[in-house]
Length: 135
Image (cartoon, rainbow, N blue to C red; front, side, top):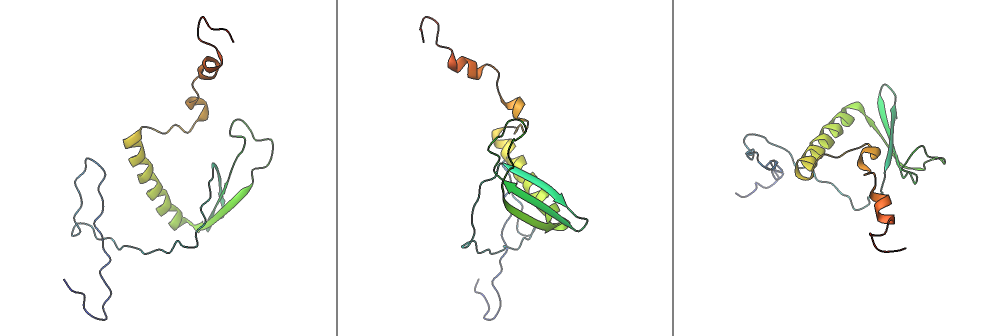
């Protein structure tokens, strides 16, 4: 189907369905495809985030905690800060929640408590030589 001159192209896309669920047709759910320009984007890694805010805004700080176990003894350098309104934060929460649900469905539950992820004895077994061998 040819586009009419002077009319913008239809930027709708079919929603992709998670595995095991039927695909939703374009007629069932229309979504505008948003174009972005990420040519000036800087990607940074973060293993720490702090959420604070005011009644009108949410402030999310990101940084790298070089001491991931226990309470850090030195300040964590914050390298990125996002300030947003609560409406955008709620949409982000929903998008992140769906993404995590899909990831866990494919790869298993993500345990956020580091102490529960550490398997006791793994370190001591790695340092202990096999029976019959001396160090």
